[in-house]
Image 1: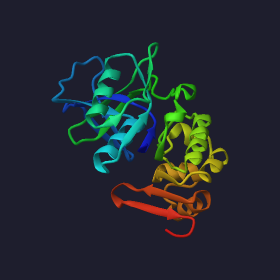
Image 2 (image 1 turned 45 degrees about the horizontal axis):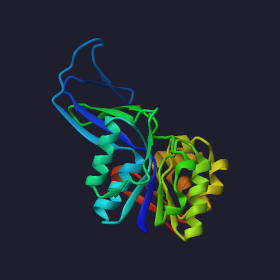
Image 3 (image 1 turned 180 degrees about the vertical axis):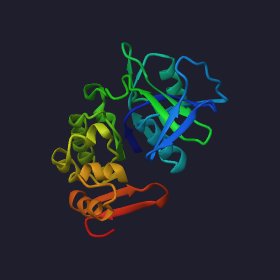
Image 4 (image 1 turned 135 degrees about the vertical axis):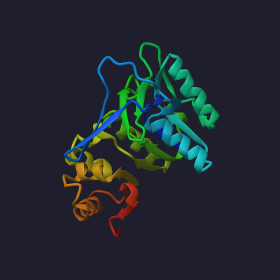
Length: 246
């Protein structure tokens, strides 16, 4: 049995740092600009793995020293091979990773300006297409199931919850935009069936139909929607919210 099994996307990320990017600030917005058709010098390039499924798995394995596995999907290509190598290096079990011979592994280019602000260009590939029928559910045994974005596949999320409950395992959820845009009326029943939901302040505002500035209203709504939740707020830290206290 594993301590944690994570579900979510897997991507190959390339970080490009360039001083050639010009930043323009106007009306509270920051825009990164470059001349169309120009060739720009890059001072640094870093290759990493990304995606909610793999990032969370590595975090649990590296920081908490937990026995960890990941359920995700990659293509039969070199970026997919790089992801498998990186996971094995971090002692994350890859036996539940799905390989798609017809699809392409997710890929992101992260452009970093001189002051570390970033722009992300993301190609999802097959990363959000986990096939429930290919998951060996009878082998999926863990104390905790951590679920990040599934590309909006709530049927798969429902099956994960049912499976976890049969095992007496906990379910933590970090939904993505594809899930949150389904609306609170659709997501509320799922929130009642899990142990913890984790959102940043903007995501919590979207879920609760509140303005981002209305922290009190967001927390009040989250206490009603979920038994326990964590709301992160950048440099201000985070709020641990339960139906009974904050």
